Length: 54
Image (tube, rainbow, N blue to C red; front, top):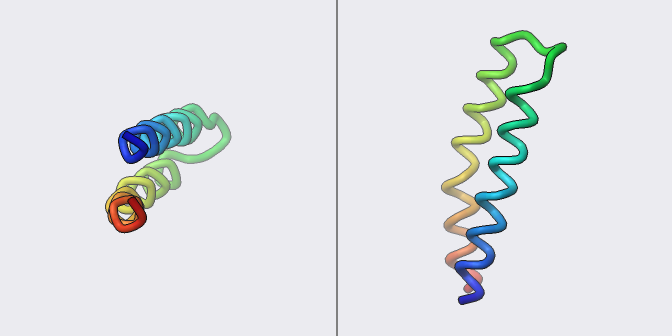
């Protein structure tokens, strides 16, 4: 149960950060895509870390 709550919080956090990156007006499109790639590739290590502690 606790694991599902943490995964939900993690997914919500990623949606908030992703939306913030997408709607930043003063950043060029190349930097936006770079930030999205970093965000996508940071999901797997965080999920592994969450599984290890629960």
